Length: 292
View 1 (cartoon, rainbow, N blue to C red):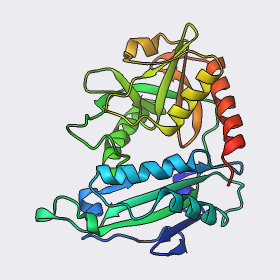
View 2 (cartoon, helix red, strand yellow):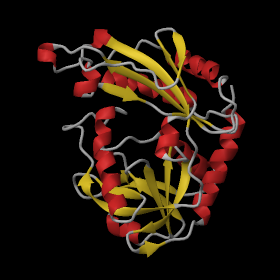
View 3 (cartoon, rainbow, N blue to C red):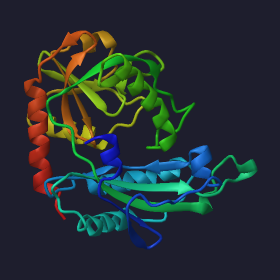
């Protein structure tokens, strides 16, 4: 799907008590979220009739709102219920992205902090195909993940994503699909859009959460499933060299769940057995638990 087509894909948005079709206008030039970035979101998925971990995504958007100084107005249970109601508007042939959001309409002192009393909510559902599990390439990014002292890295906040965006744009200009992004100490954090794993000598390794990136819901689910099926899964500080010398690399994220990395810098990789098993386990689990 092209960017133009994606912008026109079937979309339904719930706001202020009603469902609206299409990309409805919700903010203006005086809206705090537009000019100072006070927005948070989360992303669930509906595919093949299932919406795995929808409750966890709904809880996290409220936690993100609180972390950014916003005031959640919906319970996780209400968000889940609204989502299933809205999904009835789709035919199910294409995967749907589930995006609950909060944002501030007004600012506080001198307009800078968000006014929590002005927090608004919407739930946007739209068709967005998942990446095929054929794999993607990553190049080392010159840009770093921020720390808790510099940005609200404990929230899934919109203001964090321009940094991810420039990392991906830089990678694409150098012939890669995505970026391998480091933390401020030079250790591997994530890709520009997902958490990342490597496999070495049968062990599954992933960067330990250190406050510079979100420990994703799909990441946690994949780790649990692998551990339940006998794999050794370790969270630890990981260097670029360890990724360059890995037997396998794969990513986890809400958009496309589990996808192998088939090239890192100038080294080609084959989709490996652990990545394949991780995806199979996730799909089996999703179909066993992710229905309404």
